[in-house]
Image (tube, rainbow, N blue to C red; front, side, top):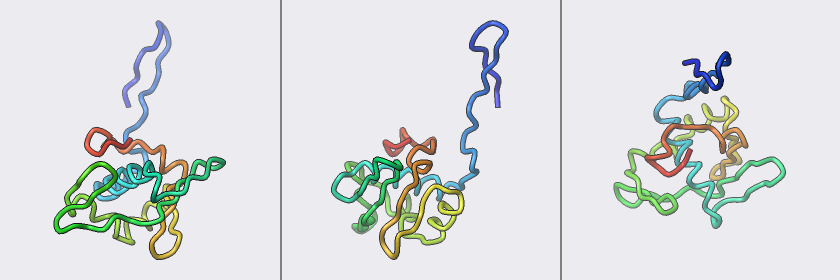
Amino acid sequence: MVAQSTQPGQTHMAPKRNPLKLNNLQLRTLALAQVLASEPGITERDETTGEVTLLRMPEPHGDHVHIGAIVVSGREASGLRNPAVWVALERKGLARSEGSSAVTLTARGVAYETGLGDRFGAS
């Protein structure tokens, strides 16, 4: 981390990027899930907790997947249907499995900075 000066005599630590050390597949999956979390027709939002349940995952169309208003390659979206990715995100407190098809992003998962915002339109 780099200390940045906010005022003379004071320093502010820049936030650590990817503090939970998610791998690339986990980061991509979380970023795409954050995009999905903003889609009203396929989610349920708990205003009290800040959690968002993804009621269904998008179906691939050949070599690509439609995620909200964006289209990504099937390879980029491969983690959405990978149970091991969701287990890892659950272990890190970012998501919770809700059965065979639904996944809930915790408030922490919704807010987690993936660093892929420019790439997918998420945080």
